[in-house]
Length: 210
Image (cartoon, rainbow, N blue to C red; front, top):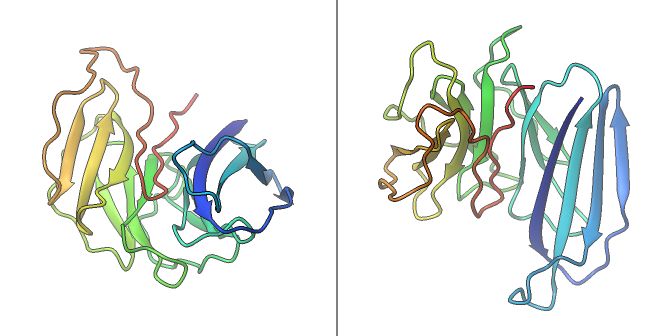
């Protein structure tokens, strides 16, 4: 079983009724919580989204489109083969990196200009490859570990539409595209213990296989 969770803050004054969707082995639950930070505006609410795969455990990531509202949450899930699956009315994506039968996809992130009408972002493979989907630009400069499944998570940079950072298993944070280098960061040399990265703009890191 694979379980993925994400909490996001969205604008909108209307209440949200908890709901669940089930399709085959996949279940999606959306519910409103009382966990909004004190600094959030009064009309903002925190939404918890949970996806459970009771089958092969191939779910690897989830992103929420930034123009989602409490009553209309939309986004994408990533499977281990690289497939990107819409939910909540998000547009379908037909072009993305895909590895049939090879569980190598590790993370997904949205570009800062992504929206319900402009799905865009990047996926991450286990070797560090960064692959665009939707309207995001292709990226050619990124850290790459050929044959070593050590990349764990990916986030985009809100200061640019053409870059971000990749997390590797020892804790190293590596820029891609036009994002700047970051230092310092927690690092566990030789210990593959870091599992995910997160940032603003509804981004999420990957989940390690178990």
